[in-house]
Length: 267
Image (tube, rainbow, N blue to C red; front, side):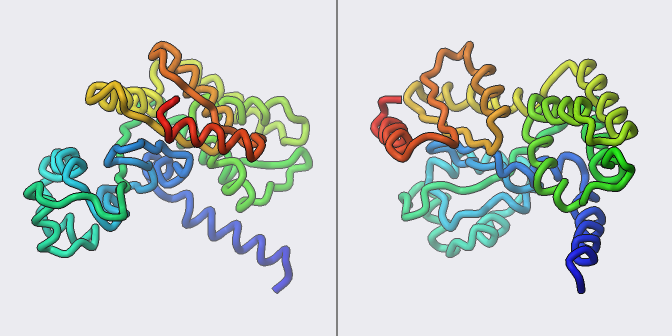
């Protein structure tokens, strides 16, 4: 099989299998640029359903108090939880009863449900349609689908600010077909009508919860995209927090210095 044929088949496979999920699930699946929280039981957005709730091997007693609220509200059984976490039943009982302490694993992964507004869902659907079926070069040839998925979709789903930046880039770039540019402009116009940003609002809600527990909590927020990072920092300004941006391009010494400051509590 030659390279062109392979790319064609791969592109078709991704289109058929990668983009057929519901918008909310795609967004959460794409959120490798998720949110990491220091000493928080729900520390990364990397699962689309509650079935992906448990990713670590152990749960500490403090975490259990937070987890139990969600688990109980979903009507899950203890067996559902310790089977997913692969924890021995007897050891799990100790966690449940507050008798166990942390072992090597300090964190667990848990999906946080995010309900998009009707306008946001429409924008997401239209963006997927743009990338899946209407992404053409100026000569009318379709741009390779699997490159779009891995290069552009993660950025577009990272944040509304990042999506707008990407769409503006399409509209202003002469390499794209007029049909593609027109559709991108339409999505940009839709963004102007959106009254809320569900993802950033959920982030701020979680930060409020953390700060409500203690003034000494540290929060590590991770994103792969600088535009999203700047957007988050902007939204956090009213909180008057000590914020340090950890970006690509820092020297090894600068990275080490910021990591040490975070660990030592200077930040």
